[in-house]
Length: 163
Image 1 (cartoon, rainbow, N blue to C red):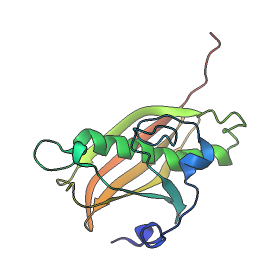
Image 2: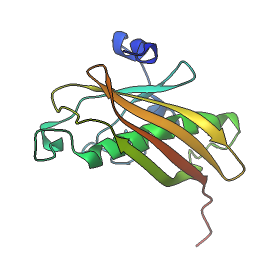
Image 3: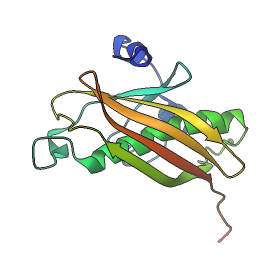
Image 4: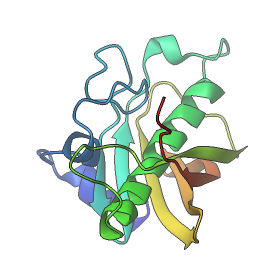
């Protein structure tokens, strides 16, 4: 297993996740701490990127005994937000109101092999590129020592317009 996962998997009490730190009231299905029916993904800073563990539920079955591709995409989308949030903070773009300054503009996912419902997944993500309009993040999911899916997420700057 890549060393970037070791810290998260070996540490029993990790404390506050990036999602809880930046957006404790977020109701996002995948990563919102305030969504009691969601996945509640918890990501942590590690080795120049971010890491998270995720244990699939029986309800995430794709009908063939493997993890549903939509759940895989949701985990990858939400986890890819965490290095983006760290970069947005570094750039001074996350203010007191806790408004998310970027939204997913694209997510390309390549499924490499089926993913068991019985084994936990490890997610890893890191910023690959930053420009004036967005942040590109690489993300991968690993389970049972093998990479199951890889992807690239594009996060674009978002500014709410007055109604």
